[in-house]
Image 1 (cartoon, rainbow, N blue to C red):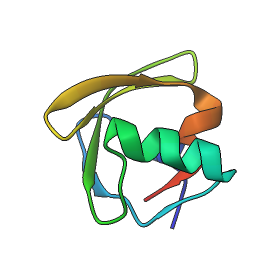
Image 2 (cartoon, one colour; image 1 turned 135 degrees about the horizontal axis):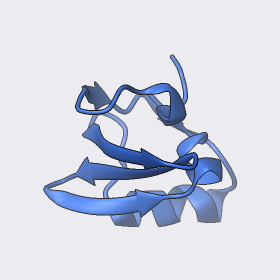
Image 3 (spheres, rainbow, N blue to C red; image 1 turned 90 degrees about the vertical axis):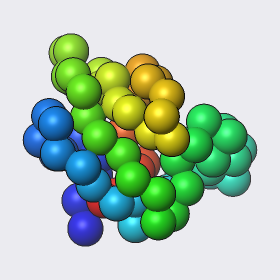
Image 4 (tube, one colour; image 1 turned 90 degrees about the horizontal axis):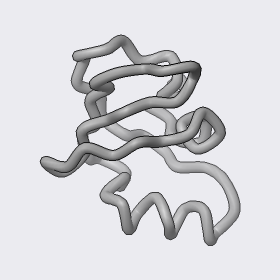
Length: 70
């Protein structure tokens, strides 16, 4: 398991765990980051990521991405 920040651009990954405080987990779940779901990094800009999750493009800060384990 590793944080989403280490994912390669264009690689499809499966979310294994979401860390952080309950409100952070809920926020990420509402965006579509759920355990067992797939996530693809589209672009990485200064540590921040643009990802594809549930057919939507979402920008994720480096801090948030480190809480998403793949």
